[in-house]
Figure (cartoon, rainbow, N blue to C red):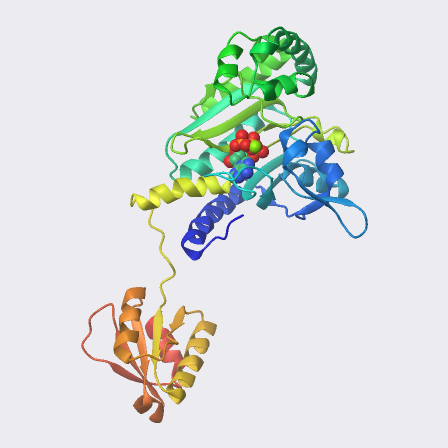
Length: 415
Ligand code: ATP
Ligand code: MG
């Protein structure tokens, strides 16, 4: 778990501002759910056989003897909230969320135990065009942020009936090749066989080239639906590659599954992952409701933007004060404080030097911070209830003396 220092938070704010703006344009409203949920929600909503539920959750028993878990992802919570507050009877819900998630994983670049996601969940939306629309939301956000080397990988997991049929075929095939599989994959043959397709072991991956594919197991209806999603993406000029091994780790997905990866990220290359989860709402006690969503990993996106910042492609301006207040001596500092607060109340950005160091040093700091104007207040100025206004931007030779009481004049000059 890491601290985010000001040098980084400017990047986070940059991403968040873009996300908010794009979501606003698409009519996607924000939802905020608690960080803590009943463990049961994730066990049912994500699936006992997944790594997330099986090995990665931060769970504890609270003082009321309830098993609680820090949320490892956002979808289950959003669906719970939508059911609990009757949102699903009010028509389609287009929602987004952002915030910390917790998974007990091995920390490395782009992988942390507290990490952050921005995600989108569209509930009550069934048509193939919506799949493309939801993907476009993620693709355009990343493109907007100037992220290079993006690739969209796409697959269809078919309906639950397609998957059940495929699962049987795959289990038979995996059993026949059991000795050649890595230990993790062997353990998953019966608990989560689709996840074997996703194995990170190169030898297992090579072996899987001969395995039956999901694409061949799709029913004509599922196939047609998948073709429609691809046509819609083509029409939106969003390039994609088909990846028949892309299955996603979570059990509730059906039909469209996708990931957006970046070639600039090394091992943890997936920036955004998502897909359709038509079975989840019902599984969590709601009426059957089609749904689709995605989640984007903020840390990985920040890594990409840090690279752009380091190469000079991305310049993020820190807030530059309209005025920098330089003062020295007790009475002068009091007057400086009053001035700074009054000007901030008028909407100006004012930074006050609190170092008590010599005027020359304070002025240097003002210059470094990029302020256009400096207000100097020393013993003399306080005595005459004035401030000395100096322009740093225009190299104007003459200071102007302005009465401390003439705040309106000063605001006009600085705006
Ligand atoms: P991965 O295969 O990288 O573990 P995942 O399938 O577990 O990803 P999802 O649950 O789909 O990931 O989460 C969506 C996104 O959240 C990921 O694509 C990634 O960008 C980010 N993410 C997931 N786990 C972490 C983590 N521990 N640290 C940082 N980011 C993460
Ligand atoms: Mg993971």
